[in-house]
Image (cartoon, rainbow, N blue to C red; front, side, top):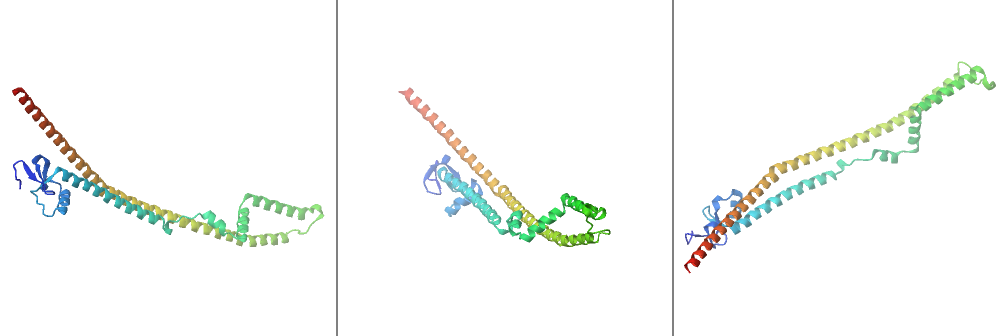
Length: 254
Protein backbone atom coordinates (compact mmCIF):
# COMPACT_ATOMS: atom_id res chain seq x y z
CA UNK A 1 0.00 0.00 0.00
CA UNK A 2 2.81 2.39 0.81
CA UNK A 3 4.54 4.08 -2.14
CA UNK A 4 7.55 4.80 -0.02
CA UNK A 5 9.18 2.79 2.80
CA UNK A 6 8.61 5.69 5.17
CA UNK A 7 5.21 6.88 3.88
CA UNK A 8 1.77 5.26 4.00
CA UNK A 9 -1.65 6.40 2.86
CA UNK A 10 -4.49 7.37 5.17
CA UNK A 11 -7.68 5.47 4.34
CA UNK A 12 -9.77 8.63 4.83
CA UNK A 13 -8.14 11.19 2.52
CA UNK A 14 -5.57 8.95 0.70
CA UNK A 15 -2.81 11.40 1.57
CA UNK A 16 0.62 10.08 2.47
CA UNK A 17 1.88 10.34 6.04
CA UNK A 18 4.92 9.15 7.88
CA UNK A 19 4.63 5.85 9.71
CA UNK A 20 4.80 7.62 13.07
CA UNK A 21 1.69 9.64 12.19
CA UNK A 22 -0.62 6.74 11.37
CA UNK A 23 -2.24 3.80 13.17
CA UNK A 24 -3.29 0.41 11.85
CA UNK A 25 -7.05 0.02 11.69
CA UNK A 26 -6.92 -3.45 13.27
CA UNK A 27 -5.09 -2.05 16.32
CA UNK A 28 -8.01 0.19 17.25
CA UNK A 29 -10.85 -0.61 19.65
CA UNK A 30 -13.82 -2.42 18.04
CA UNK A 31 -16.27 0.47 18.56
CA UNK A 32 -13.87 2.98 17.06
CA UNK A 33 -13.01 0.63 14.21
CA UNK A 34 -16.69 0.07 13.40
CA UNK A 35 -17.32 3.82 13.44
CA UNK A 36 -14.52 4.35 10.91
CA UNK A 37 -15.77 1.49 8.72
CA UNK A 38 -19.26 2.98 8.74
CA UNK A 39 -17.90 6.07 6.96
CA UNK A 40 -15.37 4.10 4.89
CA UNK A 41 -16.95 0.77 3.88
CA UNK A 42 -13.93 -0.25 1.79
CA UNK A 43 -11.53 0.03 4.73
CA UNK A 44 -9.53 -3.11 5.53
CA UNK A 45 -7.91 -4.15 8.83
CA UNK A 46 -4.42 -3.62 7.37
CA UNK A 47 -5.20 -0.05 6.28
CA UNK A 48 -3.86 2.98 8.12
CA UNK A 49 -5.54 6.10 9.46
CA UNK A 50 -3.71 9.31 10.29
CA UNK A 51 -3.69 10.82 13.78
CA UNK A 52 -5.67 13.85 12.62
CA UNK A 53 -8.66 11.85 11.38
CA UNK A 54 -8.35 9.36 14.23
CA UNK A 55 -8.72 12.23 16.70
CA UNK A 56 -11.90 13.35 14.93
CA UNK A 57 -13.42 9.88 15.18
CA UNK A 58 -12.48 9.62 18.83
CA UNK A 59 -14.08 12.98 19.61
CA UNK A 60 -17.15 11.93 17.63
CA UNK A 61 -17.33 8.81 19.78
CA UNK A 62 -17.16 10.92 22.94
CA UNK A 63 -19.97 13.12 21.60
CA UNK A 64 -22.02 10.01 20.84
CA UNK A 65 -21.56 8.74 24.40
CA UNK A 66 -22.60 12.11 25.83
CA UNK A 67 -25.64 12.43 23.58
CA UNK A 68 -26.75 8.88 24.36
CA UNK A 69 -26.46 9.47 28.10
CA UNK A 70 -28.27 12.81 27.87
CA UNK A 71 -31.12 11.27 25.86
CA UNK A 72 -31.49 8.40 28.32
CA UNK A 73 -31.41 10.74 31.33
CA UNK A 74 -33.93 13.05 29.66
CA UNK A 75 -36.20 10.10 28.94
CA UNK A 76 -36.11 9.02 32.58
CA UNK A 77 -36.73 12.58 33.81
CA UNK A 78 -39.68 13.03 31.45
CA UNK A 79 -41.12 9.75 32.63
CA UNK A 80 -40.83 10.88 36.25
CA UNK A 81 -42.38 14.29 35.51
CA UNK A 82 -45.28 12.73 33.62
CA UNK A 83 -45.90 10.23 36.39
CA UNK A 84 -45.84 12.85 39.15
CA UNK A 85 -48.27 15.06 37.22
CA UNK A 86 -50.78 12.23 37.08
CA UNK A 87 -53.90 12.42 39.24
CA UNK A 88 -52.90 9.12 40.83
CA UNK A 89 -50.26 10.99 42.85
CA UNK A 90 -52.38 13.98 43.87
CA UNK A 91 -52.28 14.54 47.64
CA UNK A 92 -55.34 16.39 48.95
CA UNK A 93 -55.67 18.73 51.92
CA UNK A 94 -58.10 16.72 54.04
CA UNK A 95 -58.84 19.51 56.52
CA UNK A 96 -59.58 22.04 53.78
CA UNK A 97 -61.75 19.62 51.81
CA UNK A 98 -63.81 18.62 54.86
CA UNK A 99 -64.15 22.22 56.06
CA UNK A 100 -65.47 23.34 52.67
CA UNK A 101 -68.01 20.49 52.49
CA UNK A 102 -69.43 20.88 56.02
CA UNK A 103 -73.08 21.88 56.31
CA UNK A 104 -74.52 23.85 59.24
CA UNK A 105 -76.06 20.69 60.70
CA UNK A 106 -72.76 18.82 60.46
CA UNK A 107 -70.90 21.67 62.15
CA UNK A 108 -73.45 21.68 64.99
CA UNK A 109 -73.21 17.87 65.27
CA UNK A 110 -69.41 18.06 65.49
CA UNK A 111 -69.56 20.78 68.15
CA UNK A 112 -72.12 18.87 70.23
CA UNK A 113 -70.17 15.61 69.93
CA UNK A 114 -66.96 17.42 70.84
CA UNK A 115 -68.61 18.97 73.91
CA UNK A 116 -70.31 15.67 74.85
CA UNK A 117 -66.94 13.97 75.01
CA UNK A 118 -65.26 16.52 77.25
CA UNK A 119 -64.80 17.04 80.99
CA UNK A 120 -66.84 20.21 80.69
CA UNK A 121 -69.95 18.21 79.77
CA UNK A 122 -69.40 15.79 82.67
CA UNK A 123 -69.03 18.61 85.18
CA UNK A 124 -72.04 20.57 83.88
CA UNK A 125 -74.17 17.43 83.68
CA UNK A 126 -73.23 16.43 87.25
CA UNK A 127 -74.04 19.91 88.57
CA UNK A 128 -77.44 19.89 86.81
CA UNK A 129 -78.29 16.48 88.32
CA UNK A 130 -77.25 17.55 91.82
CA UNK A 131 -79.18 20.81 91.54
CA UNK A 132 -82.26 19.03 90.17
CA UNK A 133 -82.30 16.40 92.91
CA UNK A 134 -81.49 18.94 95.64
CA UNK A 135 -84.29 21.28 94.61
CA UNK A 136 -86.87 18.50 94.44
CA UNK A 137 -85.67 16.60 97.52
CA UNK A 138 -85.01 19.46 99.92
CA UNK A 139 -87.63 21.81 98.56
CA UNK A 140 -85.20 24.64 97.99
CA UNK A 141 -86.86 27.92 97.02
CA UNK A 142 -90.16 26.24 97.87
CA UNK A 143 -90.23 24.36 94.61
CA UNK A 144 -90.82 20.59 94.17
CA UNK A 145 -91.72 20.03 90.52
CA UNK A 146 -90.25 16.49 90.27
CA UNK A 147 -90.32 14.57 93.53
CA UNK A 148 -88.70 11.21 94.12
CA UNK A 149 -88.34 8.93 92.11
CA UNK A 150 -87.61 11.82 89.68
CA UNK A 151 -89.73 10.62 86.79
CA UNK A 152 -89.33 13.88 84.92
CA UNK A 153 -85.54 13.71 85.35
CA UNK A 154 -85.50 10.18 83.93
CA UNK A 155 -87.56 11.35 80.98
CA UNK A 156 -85.21 14.29 80.48
CA UNK A 157 -82.14 12.02 80.57
CA UNK A 158 -83.77 9.58 78.15
CA UNK A 159 -84.50 12.41 75.73
CA UNK A 160 -80.91 13.66 75.96
CA UNK A 161 -79.58 10.16 75.30
CA UNK A 162 -81.98 9.65 72.39
CA UNK A 163 -80.95 12.93 70.77
CA UNK A 164 -77.23 12.68 71.56
CA UNK A 165 -76.80 9.19 70.08
CA UNK A 166 -77.59 10.09 66.43
CA UNK A 167 -75.63 13.34 66.79
CA UNK A 168 -72.57 11.36 67.90
CA UNK A 169 -73.13 8.92 65.02
CA UNK A 170 -73.20 11.83 62.57
CA UNK A 171 -69.89 13.05 63.96
CA UNK A 172 -68.47 9.52 63.74
CA UNK A 173 -69.51 9.41 60.10
CA UNK A 174 -67.53 12.59 59.58
CA UNK A 175 -64.57 10.94 61.30
CA UNK A 176 -64.99 7.93 59.00
CA UNK A 177 -64.90 10.25 55.98
CA UNK A 178 -61.72 11.83 57.32
CA UNK A 179 -60.16 8.40 57.83
CA UNK A 180 -61.09 7.43 54.28
CA UNK A 181 -59.50 10.59 52.85
CA UNK A 182 -56.41 10.05 55.00
CA UNK A 183 -56.18 6.49 53.71
CA UNK A 184 -56.44 7.74 50.12
CA UNK A 185 -53.68 10.27 50.78
CA UNK A 186 -51.51 7.56 52.32
CA UNK A 187 -52.13 5.42 49.25
CA UNK A 188 -51.15 8.26 46.90
CA UNK A 189 -48.01 9.04 48.92
CA UNK A 190 -47.01 5.36 48.97
CA UNK A 191 -47.68 5.00 45.25
CA UNK A 192 -45.68 8.15 44.51
CA UNK A 193 -42.76 6.99 46.67
CA UNK A 194 -42.80 3.57 45.03
CA UNK A 195 -42.74 5.09 41.56
CA UNK A 196 -39.92 7.46 42.54
CA UNK A 197 -37.93 4.49 43.86
CA UNK A 198 -38.46 2.61 40.61
CA UNK A 199 -37.26 5.56 38.56
CA UNK A 200 -34.34 6.04 40.96
CA UNK A 201 -33.39 2.39 40.39
CA UNK A 202 -33.65 3.00 36.65
CA UNK A 203 -31.29 5.98 36.98
CA UNK A 204 -28.85 3.94 39.06
CA UNK A 205 -28.98 1.14 36.50
CA UNK A 206 -28.37 3.71 33.76
CA UNK A 207 -25.37 5.07 35.67
CA UNK A 208 -23.87 1.66 36.36
CA UNK A 209 -24.58 0.08 32.97
CA UNK A 210 -24.12 3.03 30.60
CA UNK A 211 -22.66 6.22 32.03
CA UNK A 212 -19.88 4.59 34.06
CA UNK A 213 -18.64 2.43 31.14
CA UNK A 214 -18.90 5.47 28.87
CA UNK A 215 -16.90 7.54 31.38
CA UNK A 216 -14.25 4.83 31.50
CA UNK A 217 -14.18 4.73 27.70
CA UNK A 218 -13.80 8.52 27.54
CA UNK A 219 -10.97 8.33 30.08
CA UNK A 220 -9.32 5.65 27.98
CA UNK A 221 -9.60 7.85 24.89
CA UNK A 222 -8.10 10.77 26.80
CA UNK A 223 -5.17 8.62 27.90
CA UNK A 224 -4.61 7.42 24.33
CA UNK A 225 -4.69 10.98 23.01
CA UNK A 226 -2.29 12.17 25.71
CA UNK A 227 0.03 9.24 24.94
CA UNK A 228 0.01 10.13 21.26
CA UNK A 229 0.70 13.77 22.05
CA UNK A 230 3.57 12.71 24.30
CA UNK A 231 4.97 10.46 21.57
CA UNK A 232 4.76 13.29 19.05
CA UNK A 233 6.49 15.65 21.46
CA UNK A 234 9.25 13.10 21.99
CA UNK A 235 9.57 12.69 18.23
CA UNK A 236 9.74 16.45 17.75
CA UNK A 237 12.39 16.75 20.43
CA UNK A 238 14.47 14.01 18.81
CA UNK A 239 14.17 15.74 15.45
CA UNK A 240 15.15 19.02 17.00
CA UNK A 241 18.19 17.43 18.60
CA UNK A 242 19.10 15.80 15.29
CA UNK A 243 18.78 19.12 13.47
CA UNK A 244 20.85 20.89 16.11
CA UNK A 245 23.51 18.20 15.85
CA UNK A 246 23.55 18.49 12.06
CA UNK A 247 23.73 22.26 12.35
CA UNK A 248 26.67 21.99 14.76
CA UNK A 249 28.48 19.60 12.41
CA UNK A 250 28.00 21.96 9.47
CA UNK A 251 29.15 24.85 11.59
CA UNK A 252 32.27 22.99 12.70
CA UNK A 253 33.15 22.14 9.09
CA UNK A 254 32.92 25.78 8.15
